[in-house]
Image (cartoon, rainbow, N blue to C red; front, side):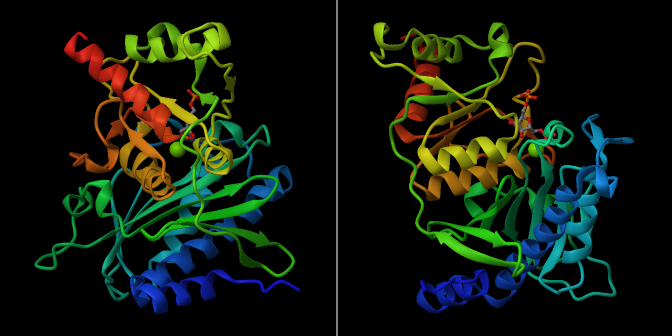
Length: 339
Ligand code: AHM
Ligand code: MG
C-alpha cells in the first residue's frame, strides 16, 4: 500500500528539510485545517443542519450575510484565538480586526480569511471554500492595530484555501511550492494527494463573468473578443469558457489543468478597483498561483507588490496560466501608452 502522508507529517518534514515552518506557523496551519473540517461538516449537512439561507445581516461591504458566512467566521475565530500562535485576525465578514483576547498568549502571526467564499453558491449546492492568508507581526514595539495587516502580499508566510466540493481539498503554500491534501472523511485526516503543483503556461480556457462585458475596459474586451473569435481569429485556436462564481472553484480548476481567471475593473462603479478583496482573496490566491508557476496581476501590476491602504481594499484580478496573464497585462499597458 502506498504510504499516506498526513498534513502534520508534511509540515514536520518540510521544517526538517528547509527549516521554514516554525512551530507557531505549523500550529496555525493545523488549527486552520481543523477549522475547515468543522466548516465542511456544516456545509455537508445543508438543510438538515439549518445552515442554508440568509442570516438577516450585512457585512461591512454591504453584502447580505448567509448563515454559513457567519458560522464559518465563528468557527475560524474560536479555533484560532487560544493557541498562542496569533496576535490578531481579520475577516471579510468583520468590520475590523479581532485581537486575541488578553486571557490568551499573543503569538507572532496575523491571520486573514474569507470564511466562506462563493456565498451565492451555498444554497444551490455548488462548490464553495475558505481562503486564508498568514502574515508575520512585524512591529513588536506596541499593541496590535489594523496597520500591522497592511503588508504587501509578497510578505505572506503561508496561504491556502479549502474547497468544499465533491471532495474536500486543502491547498497550501508556505512559499516553497504548492501541496494539495484531500480530506479522508472516515479517518477525519488530511492526506497529501499532490505535491509541487504546476500550472501550465498556456491554456485554451478562460473564466470571467461575461454578463459584465459591456462595462469592461477596452483591454479586457480586446482579450475576450480574441478568445471568442477562436480558430479563425488572431489567436488561431478555439477557447473554452468556465465560470463557477466561486473563486476557490475557478482557481482550483486552474491549478488542476490551467486557465485564466479574471475579475476586472468595470465601469458600473468606476471608483471601485474591482469586486474581489485584496487581502482575503487576491493575495492568498496570488501567492498560491505564483508558487505554482502562474502569474497574477491587477491588469497592470503584480498583485503581491501592492501595499494595501485598508483592510477591506478591493482590487481587479487577472490570474492563472503565465502566457495568458502576460498577454492581458500587455494589452492593458499598450492601451495606457496608446500603442
Ligand atoms: P464572496 O466572497 O462574497 O462569496 O464573493 C466573491 C465571489 C468570488 O468567489 C467569485 O469569483 C465572484 O464573487 C463571483 O462574482 P459574480 O457573482 O459577479 O459572478
Ligand atoms: Mg470571497
